[in-house]
Length: 283
Image 1 (tube, rainbow, N blue to C red):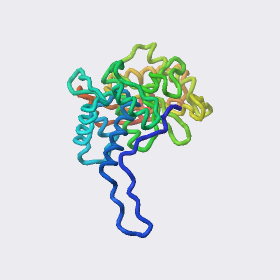
Image 2 (image 1 turned 45 degrees about the vertical axis):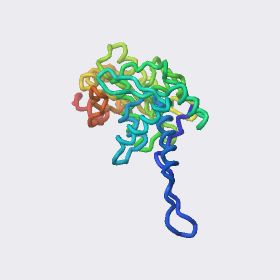
Image 3 (image 1 turned 90 degrees about the horizontal axis):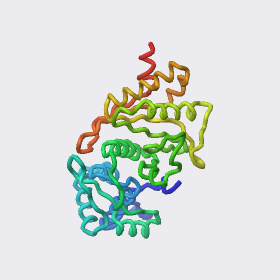
Image 4 (image 1 turned 45 degrees about the horizontal axis):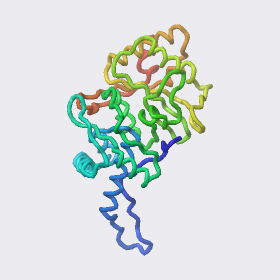
C-alpha cells in the first residue's frame, strides 16, 4: 500500500539522558520543521485541507492549534510551497504546489504531486470524508484517504462497482469502507452500496482488497438525516427481501456528522445500522 501506514508525528520525543539529569528540551526549530513537513505530508495525502483540518491533524491536543496552523500555512504559502483556493461558502482550501511536492518528495521519499490541477469537487462531501478520517487518525488508526484512492495511490480503487470515500485500517489489516452521503442518492446508487455488503461482508467472508488487507466493515457517514434515512431504507428493503442477513447489516456502522457551510464539523452521532436503525423498525 502506498504510504498508507506512514503517519506524521506532531512533536519530537523528549528523551532523558542516561545520567538521569534534566530532560532534554527539543529544539523549537526542529519541532517547527517537523510540523512543516507534517503539514505538507497531510496535504499530499488528503489533496486539500482547511486550516481547521490541518490543526486537527498536526496539533490535535494544542490549546493554540488554530493559531499555529494558520501561522504555518501562511509561512508555507509565502515560500510558495503550498497554494490556496477559495471555498464556495468562504474560507480557503490549501493544496501542495509543485515546489512543495518536490520538496516533500526529496525530504520523505513520498510520491507527492502538485495540487495545481486538482478539482475541489463536492466540498461538503469531501469535508465529511476528511473529518471522519481525521477523527480516526486522532484515535491512532491508520487511514487511506479519498484522494489517495481516487488518484490510484490506495490499495484498491473500485470494488464491486463502488469506489470508497476512504478506508480505516486496523492493526490486523481489517478495513472499514467509508461511504459518505451528503444528499439522497438514487435507488440504483444506493443498491450498489447494499450489494457491496451483500457480496463482501459477513462472518464467513474475508474479501481481500490488497495483500494483507481485507474488508471487515462498512461505515455510512451522512451529513444530514435525510441522506441517512434513504440509505437505511435501502438496507431495510434488502433485509426484508432476504438479500441481507442480520449479521451482515450488523457489520454496517452509521454516523450522522453535520458539516457547516464553512466545512466545520458538528457533533457526531454514531450507531449501528442493525442495532440502532433496522431492528427497532422491525419490532
